[in-house]
Length: 503
Image (cartoon, rainbow, N blue to C red):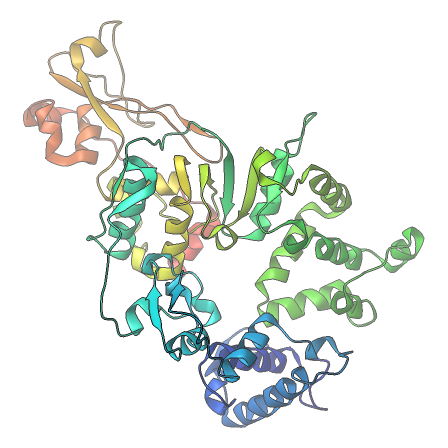
C-alpha cells in the first residue's frame, strides 16, 4: 500500500496487486498480463464483487511496476520491493534453466506443484518421475495444481502398502476419503499394529489447522510446576512470536508504551503507531484477508495482558532438537511429509457435528458443503500417525457415517451377572432385557481434548438405531421394536449452528 501510485492506494487495491503478483509467480507465463488479475475481490464492506476493467488495468500496471523494482539488484530500502521466495523461483523459471547433467528428475509432493515448477521440470531433456497423493493436496490457495492429473505419462504405479501405520489408522484415513470425498478405491495393506482409542505411545505430536490453536496448545502443555519441553515444527523463529509481541505492544496505550519503553521491531506493524493504531491495523488485516496476522491478532486479544509472560514461557520451553521434546506442535501444513509415533488431531478442523443416526436432525448439514482442501487437511493430519491416533469427536462422527460405532457384542448373561444394567445412552432409560442372547457394548475412547467417552452397554433399540438390522442378531425384531425408542438431543455450539445455516 505504501508504494502504490498517488490516489491508487488503499487496502483493497493493495490486496489486488499482491494477488496479481502471486498468480503470476505461480503461473508458467513469461509476461505479467491482465489475465493474472483476480476476477473477484472483496470491497470495503467485505462483499465479494467482480473486479471492474479499470481496476484490472490499474492492478496489472502497479503489479508490473512492483515486479520491476523487485528485480533491481541494488540495495532495497522499501520492504514492498524485497524479493520473495516465490519471486526468485519465478526468476529461475524465466531464466529457462537447463539441468543437463541429470539422467532423471524425481518430483515429490507432485500434487502441490505450481505451473511454474512444472514448467521448469517438463522442459528438461531427461526422465521425470512424479510422486504424490492427490488426497494430500493442501496448497491450492497458493496456485498449486495436481501434476499427477495434468502431466502426460508413460507409466503409472500405485503404492499399495503403507510402511507408516497399522490397519486402524489406515481405516480412519480411508473412511475420510470414502465419506467426505466419495473415493472408495483407495485401500492400503498396512502394518499390523496401531490404535485409535486414546492411548499414547512414543513421541506425541499435536497437530492443528491454525497457528492460533498451536499457540493455545503450547500455552496448555507448558503450564504447571513442571512445564513440558516442546518443539514447534519449522522452528520458533518461523512461528512468529516476535510479531505477536509487536501486535501486543501496538494494543497498549501510548503512555504505557512510553512508560515501559516498549518498542515495536516489525517495520510494517510499527507504521500503525502513527496511523490508526491497533483498531486500524486490525481493519487492514481483515480487509486484506491476511490469515497469518488474523491468527496473531486473535491470540493477542484472547490472552491480552498475559502475552509477554506466555511468549517468554514458550521460548524457555522450546528446544531445537525435536528428538528430546515431549510434545511436537504445529499446523498440518508445516507437518506435511513428517511422521510421529502418536498424533493428536486437534479440534479446529472441519467438523461433522453428530453421529450418523442423528444427522436427520440437522437437515442443513452437507459433507459436500466443504472444499476438498479442508477434507485433505484432515486426511493429512490423520496419516502423520505411526502407532497411535488420538481423534476428535468429529472424527468419530465421520467413522459412524461409514457404520463404525466401536461396538462389541457380548453375551447378555455375562453382562447381567451383577444385576440390572441400563443403557449408556444419555436420555435412554431402557434396561438390558434378560431374554436376549447378545448385547452391544460401546468401547471407551479418549478424545484429543482429553475428554473421555467411557462407553457402556446399549439397549437393543439404541443399538438398532446405530447398526440397523444387524441388531436383530442380538434380539428378535419384536423385542427390539417393543422397547422405548430414544431420540438424542443434538445441541450445537451457536457458531457451528450458524455456519450450517449459511452453507
